[in-house]
Amino acid sequence: MKKNKVKQFREAIPLSIAELARKADLAPQTVTKMEKGLPTRKYSELKVAKALQKKYEDVFLSDKDI
Image 1 (spheres, rainbow, N blue to C red):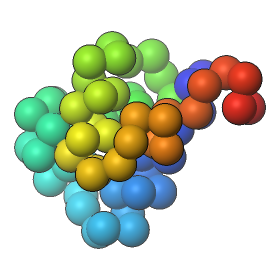
Image 2 (tube, helix red, strand yellow):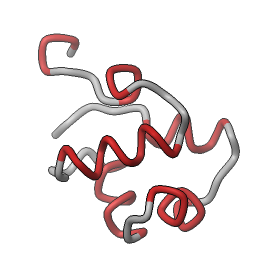
Image 3 (cartoon, rainbow, N blue to C red):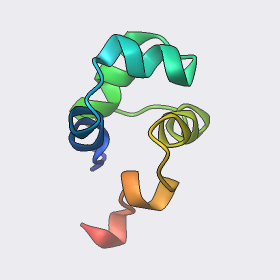
C-alpha cells in the first residue's frame, strides 16, 4: 500500500471525494483508491496534489519516508 495524505488534506479544506475528483479532473473512484493506498498513476497523483494546492512530496510519501 502506498502511504499518502490525500484524505487528511481533503478533509481539512473540506472537500468531498466528488469535489476533489472534479477539481483534479479525475473519476471519484480514482480518489477513493488513492485514499485507500491502492496503486494509481503518478499523473493522477500529480493532478490531485495540484487540486489540493500542495506539493507532490507533501501529499505522497516516498517508500523511504515510511
